[in-house]
Every structure is written in C-alpha cells, then in structure tokens.
Image 1 (cartoon, rainbow, N blue to C red):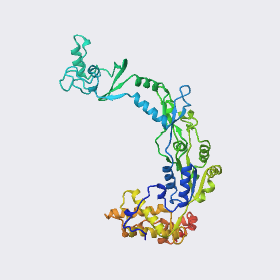
Image 2: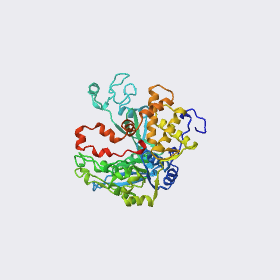
Image 3: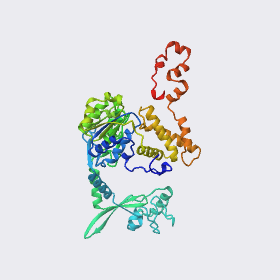
Image 4: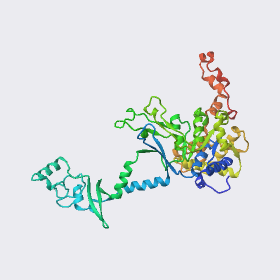
Length: 492
C-alpha cells in the first residue's frame, strides 16, 4: 500500500512537468531533459508500450518556442522555382502591425460626415436615418436612399424604380479631404459591412507598398505545434510535395506553383521535435532524414512524375529539428549506419527499462500512472484504492511471466492502460461512482491476450490450430508450419 493515505486515484497528484509523468524510465527521462535543453537527437530502444512516444512528446514542451516562420514566394521570372523566405518573430509581428495599419480604422456610419454616409448608402437623404447600405429604401420613412439631384427631372422616378428592383446607385468608396494641422490630406471612406473603414494617406501608402510585394504562402507558421509525429509517414508526407494543377499553373485559369507547395514533416518540425517510431520502417527514406539533419535544409519538389507539380522545386527549405527515433531491439541492425552515427554523434542512444523494482515508491508511481490514464481517457471514473492495488498486482504478475523479473512491476504500461479502461467501462455500465475491486476483477477476465485465452482453452497454439483444421487441410500440410508455432513461455 502507498505511504500516503489515499481513498481513490482522485487523491493522487499529477505532476505538471510532462517528463515527470513518465513512469519508471528515470535514466531515459534524465537524458531527455538534457537532449531538449541542448537540442540533441535521441534514439529510444525497447518494446512497444513503455513510454517512448510519451518521452518524445514531453521533450517538445521543454524546448524554446519557434522563432521563425517559413514562406514560399512567387518567382515572377520563373514561377516553377519559388523562393523560400524565413521571417523572424520580430519581422512577422512588425509585418502584422503594418497590415493592421494598412487596414485603416473601423467606425460607425454615424461617426463620418453626413454627405459621405449618404454617398456610401448608409444615411437616408430624406430623414437622416442610418441603416444598412443594402437597404434601397429607408426603413423609417420609406423614401429611396439613392436620391441623386444631378439626375434631372426624372431622377425621382428612376430612384423609385431602382429601389423596387433592388438596384443601388450609391458608392462603395468615397474620397474626401481633411485638415491635419496645417496640411490638407486625402482620406478614403470604404464600406465595411455595417461599418465604415477610413484610410488616411499613410494607410494608403502602406497598402500600395504591400500590393507591390510578390505574393507568398506560409508553409510553416510561426505559432505551430513543436511536436511532429511522422510514424508511418509516406514519402510525400515526410518530405513535402507540390499539388497537381490540371491547368498546369496557368496564370488566369490555374493555381500558381508557389500556392501548391506543401511542407513535409521534416519542414514542419523545424525548431521542434520530429518523432518517428519504428524508424526502420522508413527504409531508404532514412537517407533523406540523414540529409535533412546534416544540411538543416531540404528541398520541396513535386514527387509524382505525372503531376503538373513535378517541375516545381523550392530549394533550401529549413529543417533544423531534434530527431527522436524509436525502435525495438531486434530492429537495431535495420537502422541506416550513417543515420545512427549521426544520432550518436550529436545525441544519445537509450535502452528503455521493461520493469522497475516492486517497492513503496514505485507502487505510488503506478497509482500516478492509473490516475493519468483515467484523466487522459476522460470517459471513466476514478478508481478506488483497493481496485487500483489489483492493477498493481497485475503489473507485478506480468513482470514475472513476461519480463522474467521477480518482485518487480512491468513497464509495458500500454496494455495495463487498456485494462484500466475496460474496468472503467464496466463501472460506467453499472453506474458506479468509482471503479471498484469487482469491476477490475471482471475486466481481468475479459481483457486477456488472445494467446493466454488460447492456452487456457486448448493448452497451446498447435492444439488450437489442429482442432480448427479440416481433414483436407491437415492432409495438405497447409497448417503444418503452425503446429510448431512458438508460444511465449509467459502464456504457458
């Protein structure tokens, strides 16, 4: 039992630091802290479900926030070769301020000169009532809002007819002047939904300056997720691509090449953490990861030779990421030697623990793990302490039969997480306030590996296959190879 008096997992304190939520991997956590602070790479080796992805994700909370935004810029002379532009946080914020300044100020139609609000279609020239410019007649007096004295003797008739047909004569933009000190300056009033936008000379100059800039597209925004999961990513997902355009990027009909550029995971992870579980499954793509790590930049190209994007290429897109790779022990030889050398040369290789000693401190850690799983699930109630201790004992049993460690607790926690959820689902179905001891005992009968159920019913896998084989299958030897199927001694 834990040293502290707790009645349920509701009383267990959850650490605020994500790395402190990793259970039983003290050495790996210590190295991960250093790797996050020093921006080192990491290779985590061990079986599934022991916290590799949790460590990688926790590292992303400890690194500095990104300081740069990445854009592709239209190349007027050679559209198929867009430029790459990297903007600092200060530049992005300054540009945002300039855009806001160029947008002018927003006011109500009541706050502008009466003649201007009439021309824009807000103010009724008959009674002065303010309404939406889409109203062709005044909601108060019913008179047309589009009176124009310059129309001649038939002006009123045209205004009434226009109002009936929904035709408007008012303007979307009105130019005027105003005095600032001793200087007269031009000012523009524009419709802006039910408001009016006012642009002074400075705002107009900024707007013209911005319009002269080459158009661009942000492919890696400044405010972004610093944890990029690339497990099982395809080539295009990992390295980026250029979308197909059936019009071939025609200036009038199609989409310009720079607009079709898509960043890959290696680009999105710039200044962040790129996590690749089962890294050996990337095969030859490991070479591209190596290049991106060495050069800290990698081009984005169209990867489908049948696509209009195949001729498009953006060079020198930044890829300064922390690589956290993970694999099982048996897959180590499949990691590309230069890639592994690059990780070890600027980082650490960590062999994960599969169990931890059974003692009071680690029992409390197990309770923390149970509480974390319940909170992260969000659909099951907390667990009574007696019920939680059954989970602890199950962890001890699995350490003995799976990890072959006596007086220990297994760290293959993903499967135990499934047991916790199964117990919680049973508690919910019975409308229990907390997960009880009986709920966990019932879940243990249900949440059992298939191999263990087979061994209990048939004795071993060979007997199970033999009992379900037809006579013709046995004679053909179709299942012959399976009669010698290796059964993990943990399930004997």
